Amino acid sequence: MRRFVCACCGNCCRWDGVVYAKEEEFPAIANYLGITVEELIDKYTRLADDRKGLVYCCKSDNSCIFLDSNNLCSINPVKPKQCSTFPYDWKVSSEYMEKCNGHWEECAQERESKIAFVHVLGHPNLPLDVASAPGDAQVFNCHNFCRMLSFLEIPFIYYGVPGSKVPPGGSFVSTGKPTGKWRYGNAWHRLYNGRLSRALGKNILDSDGPQLVMSMYGAAQSGIKCAGFPVVEPMVGYDHCWAPFRVFPSYAQQNIIYAKQPERTWQSRYFDAVIPHFISPEDYFISLSPEDYLLYLGRDAADKGVGIARECAAAAGLELKMVHDGLTGAAKAKLIAEARAVLMPTIYPEPFGYVAIESQMCGTPVITTDWGAFPETVLHGKTGFRCRTQADFLEAIRKATSLDRHFIRQSAIGRFSMEKIAPIYEKYILFVWNVFKNGGYYAQDAFSPTFTLGD
Image (cartoon, rainbow, N blue to C red):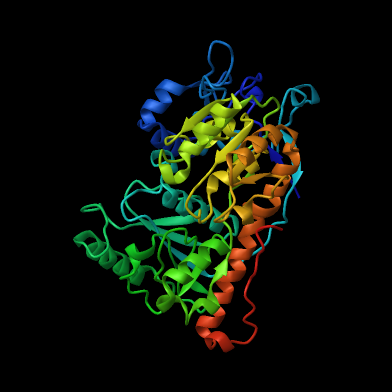
């Protein structure tokens, strides 16, 4: 199969023609804009020339009303189906396609899942809405995990706080409004776990097929009653674990947790797995004309190496753009794609580091320290550089322009795309079901999935 990769050039948003305003799409767009459906219709639509329905308005230059000043779609996560199916369902002349900067690339074949149902226990305090919490890694993990289940066509429920935006294919069960900020053992922890347990009890399927519970927020969900079904802690990038089945994003993180919590892991570690975090290639793109600035995306904190980033940029005589929060979607991808390189000089052992794979998915070299997950995620001299001294960092900055950006992106697709990782997660879920139901370590055909991040 082939996938079209959008370059966010905005040309298709300026072509002659109309985008039809479909009634069934109004609620999602209105909710995203923070207005009512009536306000959306009044402000953003008009009657079609044939008077057979509504179309979205255009600006005075004939561009789409939702195209913003940065040449990006301001409603990209909820854009009309007509737009999201470009160019698959469009009849576009070669003249117009020549103006498009996107390209085609190969992707995996579609397939069918054997998993009956997954119950996803989400964030205890924040709704599932990446745009409203762009700096929260756990919200992003929840969102990504649900997208993966949708991709695999596995039915699921997301249990979370009101205001959550669940990807297609899933349903939502509210855990109610938080009564306070979660802390282990506090009043909200106890109330939250009680609500989760009752909700799970009401929604467990009457099915013999594989049905699992996914704890996405670690110890916050450690008091649940799971109705006799296996609980998996996927994407363990934090400093503890509680569930009997765990997925770590890197071998570095797995080893840290095993050393830190031997009493909790030594009897059940036979059933863990290392599966990297993943992203969708469609959300990222290569810039046709990268600029000559360095980029730092992350917390403004000493342990993230922000001081090293500043020193190296100054020594190299290059502009350093720094973003600590609030950037998502196409705007984030554009900033990464146009950078000379992305700096990630994290001082502590990074459990994974999403920015490293986002950078590579944009074809942009990533320059990191040489410990934590980076030796597993960054191919030194190919997709970026791993450094220990200032001389290393300055040499990496100098050499960044010599790396092949198309190779970097293709390498990232082959290692960290949803199409690559989703089947491994599915295999692990089926593995857990087998060992849970059929004797643990001695279960027949209990073949655990293995994945080498450097592949």
